Figure 1: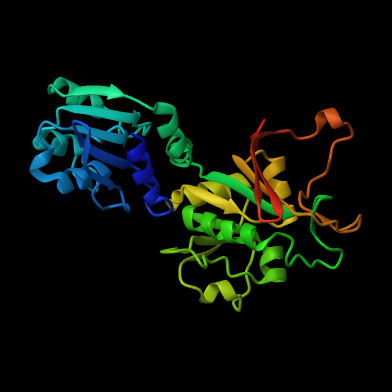
Figure 2: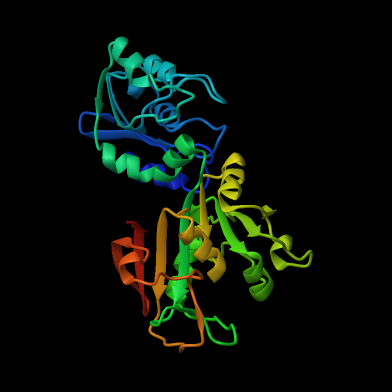
Length: 322
């Protein structure tokens, strides 16, 4: 199943509004074939793996990270392909949480005589947590990202922020843009920095949908870049529903301070990725979290640290809401 999970990750950033899914066909101790879902409308992971296995799939085991579909969508039911291939045992990771589909893939295969077992559920669920939120709530997975100084500043007193973080940190951000469906900034950041919000120096990279809150100049550089640029207005919950309605399951929020503050204040974030650089900007510099603080520390917003990693000269903190 971990081979199937590694295969699934090849589809990150490319399958929306579908989940990432990987599959492996195994006979005895030998992996015969692997496959993953490459994009919406294209064959599912198990179909690709079974096609690659051909006649060798008969009597083999199939590992797939998500319960096979049992409905007609853009593609036929995967359960039919599995039965036609003669698979002996099915091992799947996550149950299908889609309320409009109702699952049933595992039940159908079991009823048809295929031995069915669920394994590595937590790991498979985690691989698709953005899609699981999207499909059950109608909201995208929201990742806040900021690069700050040791004293928590986003820019100097003059507004200069190039560059707080290291080359290695900025390269990692480009990888995140490649893996997430959309990248979002506020109108202030778009005007001050005139960013491209594209993916650079990533092999086979693709640009996420670029989203600006409020307004964007017709001469903005990002308008000339390949890919889609959207300008959205309204309360954040409504904006997020618009984003999800467009089939975007995840969004990387890159600021600025007022935008980060709004997401924090309204508790509309799922993950925070914070680069801390070994610099000090001083008391009059711009704080990264533009929200009013509480009078008492006991009332301060809390987060749970899930990972700490050194990236170049910086420290990367990954946090979740407490």
